[in-house]
Length: 336
Image (cartoon, rainbow, N blue to C red; front, side, top):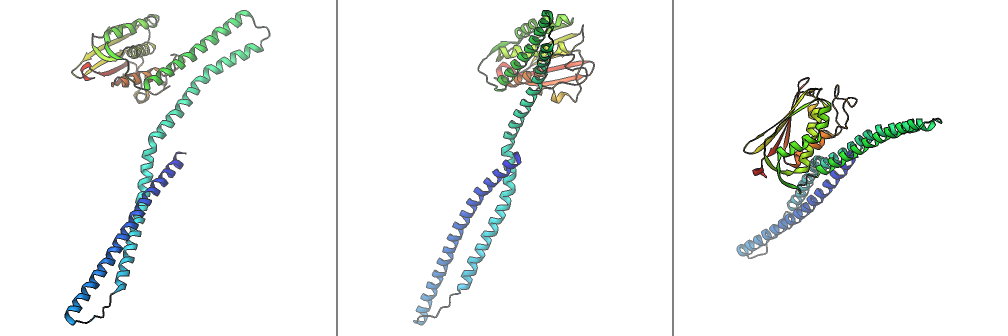
């Protein structure tokens, strides 16, 4: 489809360019032909005057019309060759220009297609589970109340998973808009403390210590999305850390930026996975599988959108078996 559209757009580019080129060629030929005729008339009149003055008789002038005709023919051939060259050059240039014109559209369509495919894939698992459980229990004519209760509890869990997925997809879509309507002065220390309260139960279940060393630094930002950002990184660090480990939050301010570090001593990330770490639904292999850690691989994608919304950037350093450091860079308050 993309190649067909590219060829159509190239044809339109070529048609427009050739119409302009041929129009100019016709105009140029008309002007030059008229100029040649004018020069021929002027020369004839000049010679007539010259012979009239010197001989007092009407001269027999032989005007070489063949030269004039040949000049016009050569002009026509030159213009045709020029238009053929323009046709070839415009065709090649138009083909590549069409590719550059359509590339953003193609990328957007491909992204939407991947999004639909990814969402369909993620929805299939809980929906299949729901369908299978319901079908099995419907066939059981001796279904007991306790079994029905367990079925409903299981179904409710799957529904909650679907709701969690849909909520995260909505968040991701909202943050991709990158609107800055709710920006205000935000204290990062307060944000980090509020985020820590939200995940304290998860940390306790895994006996993980959170050392919050964030300083009282103020930046301009969206308080709610920054809280979401801290929760995502803390939740991620806890989930991928073994029991009894430590998660450390630190901050640093320079003249132009504020750096927030989220450091864990967990499983680490393979260097080949880091470039795709913020892709939607991406899950690393090996010890970071869904069977061990619940989730849909949307958290870091949302985090990246929040960071970009604040004109920030992120850096990842990781070593397998030793842990990971996520460094988030924000412009300082004066830079906004």
